[in-house]
Amino acid sequence: MRINRYLSQCGICSRREADRLIQAGHVSVNGETALQGMDVSADDTVCVDGKTVHLPEAKTYVKFYKPKGMICTFESGAEHSLGDFLKKYPKRVTYAGRLDRNSEGLMILTDDGDLIDRMMRGRNGHEKEYLVTVDRPVTDDFLKKMTSGVWLEELHVRTRPCRAEKTGEYDLSVILTQGLNRQIRRMCDTLGYHVRALKRVRIVNILLDDMKPYEIRELTEEERKELMRCTAADEVYGGKDCNGRMP
Image 1 (tube, rainbow, N blue to C red):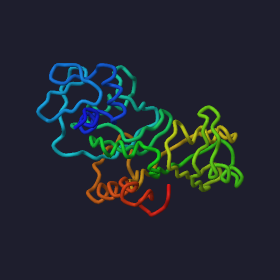
Image 2 (image 1 turned 135 degrees about the vertical axis):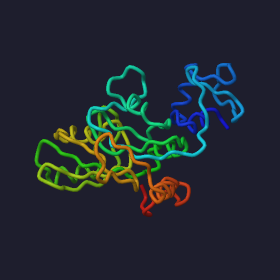
Image 3 (image 1 turned 90 degrees about the vertical axis):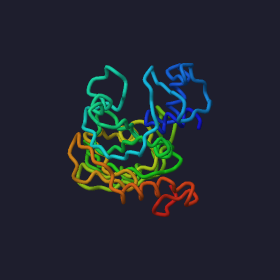
Image 4 (image 1 turned 120 degrees about the vertical axis):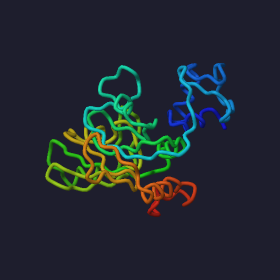
């Protein structure tokens, strides 16, 4: 298989991130610096920064409650990072979608590179649900503008239409089908609101439920199968999500 896919299957990173590692010279195959697009097999010795990596015998799928203040990075030396926390976990996994430092809630961690790639592609339109608290009363006009899409000047892009519902005077739930950097915070800022708290409570069919910060749980077989069905929607269901809706 191609080396970028091999690295993603090892749970190191996504294929796109693997390409960057290869281009930067961090990857070797049988003692030689790896080249973009080369093929490798289980018989080859593949190393990242001098450490040999192996294809896992069985895939790992877990959900994790990221606490507020934790940084989603595996860079060494980063304070209060996800990478440092996962050193205690018995299997090498990485994230299928980040949360910013000031946000908390659900993350999916896995060593299944194909799943990571499918979930990281915004065009696949997989749902993510958030509970948001803002600094001003939530109005009908604010909700209408959020759901219609917001022009983000700093990113030069208009957000996709989304679903937003008032859940309290200062609270709302938001369901996105894309994952722009700090998207909800940017949308609220553009509309004159400031996000005080943000928690992700659902990714596709996976729920945060009653998990506590720092808690890790393996996905049940039912959760895993449904996640696989939903994330394959762009191939199996002609561009519709697992509920039959167009993203």
